[in-house]
Image (cartoon, rainbow, N blue to C red; front, side):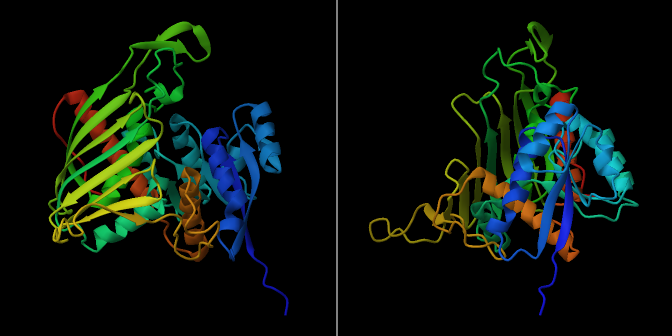
Length: 389
């Protein structure tokens, strides 16, 4: 009997900088990590603003077409899935085009640049019937998947306090040029860039936020212009944010602190959290990604300490099926593996006709949290976070 032909999804990547390469890596390596894969994907189109970078991207990943107009992807009947990997300020127009043409969409965070654009996406969702997923990959380490399971099982009891942080140090140098991620006008700033990830992850683990109170820091008022290093330009976005969060009562409750920083001297790519509850605790640091630490409040301290204390759960690369045991559960996991798992979750949902998680509505809720944090920073007080819509 002839083998049934697999469905092939044709993929277009809009924006082929660092994150575009990360998304491409997922497609190119998916068959190694998910076996047997019930579908195939093929990157057919790459779009950047400049012809030479589009051509270089096409050659690098073996795509068929290099284009400079994103509409040749978002409005192309020969493309099934559109990846949005462009700067934040470009997402809105690209998303509306892809949604209007019924494309499946996989969008890097944050969804859009501001609240006005978020409302435009909500309006477009009234007629959109496609599959729309978000790249929020920190949910997809085995350790954070296990943390979510334990939270759902009530392992920590009622949440009392929590902390989340995402820390970089790339902006500690005052000579670092003002690229788009440091520009508020371009939709940048640490609240949108790193804050989107840690806000999503803590919401995912402890429940929806009720109120926020925010303080921000801009380390240097001016920076060299990225296109003209001899010229300095004013900085209009924050480098560091600290957010006091009140969660519940409809969620699991508790009070927390969330930080995001690009001026955390001595850090590299450090995402971490702690959750403390009435019956236990959880903590994780992505610089030690194989391990989720757990604490049982009821563990005996006898004799001589018994088994009281934080214990390491070796999550490693222990992904659930349909992930293949490759390279194996015992091997150390890397950052890019979480990206692949997030992409795989989206693709399997698309193939099975399900709603992906996280989906566009989570992207919109993260945007609401971002806007609440921004508003609190501007007004200098507590701000209510809108209910999930």
